[in-house]
Image (cartoon, rainbow, N blue to C red; front, side, top):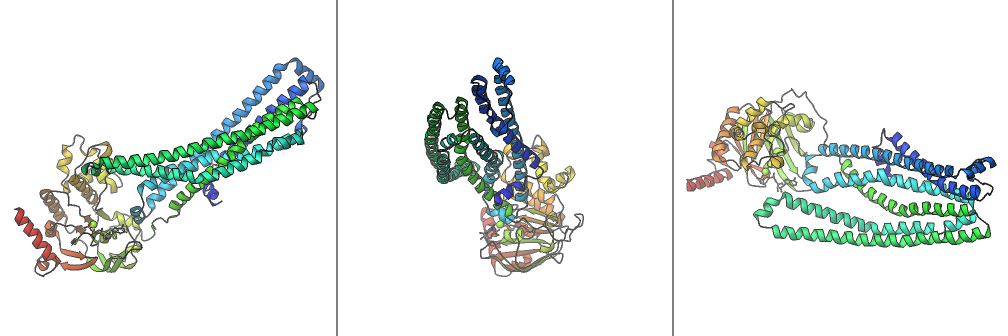
Length: 596
Ligand SMILES: Nc1ncnc2c1ncn2[C@@H]1O[C@H](COP(=O)(O)OP(=O)(O)OP(=O)(O)O)[C@@H](O)[C@H]1O
Ligand SMILES: [Mg+2]
């Protein structure tokens, strides 16, 4: 029931069209019921000359009309054709309206999902599997769309057919109705039980398909690793195994379905045979007319197929329910809260950052950051050093509120971070994440992503500061060059510099560079560092690095060890006290001397 409520919450403003679809179902069904009655009337009354008995007290035609019809039999033929045209016309309208509603519904659902996913916290995104989310947004949405477009309508149609045919049959002959519907409940139960049983198999097939897709996706997006490690053979085997499993599951299901259709066909035939056997006997006995017999055999055809379909529809509805559940799971995940101080974006923060007794752990894990106390003055440049896994990225990712902390405090300009509106806050921070991502769009768009309107001058300035100008000038299309899947491939260092330009373009009061220079050569690094030096004092700058070249820029250096601040101070001071910094310094110097 909850799933129905979910579906209909997306149907605002569509109810009229959905009602129209339902009205057309009723009209189409009613018209398709008219034909057997017409045939019966033609055979019994027009040809057979029996007194007409119309069901539901329909008006009995006068004798002169019947005489006229007998001389103009084509009129009866025309009537049958006209009724058929109407019945099919209404069916067409029904499909049209229900498809319209379903497409619009699916569009709204997709938009809502996308909108929601965009607003979900960074923490959520960092733990979900992309493949799974894509599958939910595509195939699950499609299952629900089919439910709205087809199953719901078909079920309504089937129920309506049964409700309308039974009384028509009963008004014609009660005994005959009994024999005509004897096997119908068995068909229904058989269908229902069968599809309930195969539901597990459908699920297994879905899962096998999901696995196949994931395998494909993984090996294609990781193709460089596959090639580099000569793992083609292994990947091919893995894919073939997944494909084989999927085929086996499909084949099993198809065989089972073939068995079902054949066996339920037999049941249906049994019902038709019963109608004929008893019908012919009753006709010979004079209990029913020949026209009635024909009408019954038409109706039983109309009744038994939808009943047989009903089992399938009910199972498909079960599948739709599973899909709805999977979608609800996404939609029920709370989005990032955006409440807090949302200054006008033109209001620029000063950029003073203070960590007070801050501890942090990822969901359910142990403490990654422990008892951090650090005050960074506005305009100060801090370099953070530390072994891999010591918590450097974690510390800086807290500043734009990518993750929420619960112990201790972070203050910006003396105000608790949690009381800032995230959007506002993030617009005040230019950040290069450790694994920067570039879109398959133009360089200009990639660099200017944080700008409200792409501003060529700002983009070019940022590119120059990131030592990217020369590279770009070599491209035929300059800043319009499209990178990634549809365009040119950038080198690792070029990608990093793009990400730096993207962080600088805003001229934000806080700049964070997480390992942003690891892939550029020493010379380029120096150019960028010199550029940053020129900017010094204009923004609070945090640079995470493993190389000591950046420390020339630092006002202070922070050394992290196992989530704690191990050392803090100026280069000149730290170099003279025994500790991690001195150790790193001597190792790197030794290496440089050896290399030099
Ligand atoms: N999203 C996450 N969920 C759970 N644990 C995480 C997550 N990101 C990082 N960690 C864990 O937190 C610890 C610190 O990771 P972090 O990325 O902050 O290290 P780092 O100092 O930046 O290392 P590196 O120099 O390699 O970039 C690691 O043990 C890591 O396994
Ligand atoms: Mg890191």
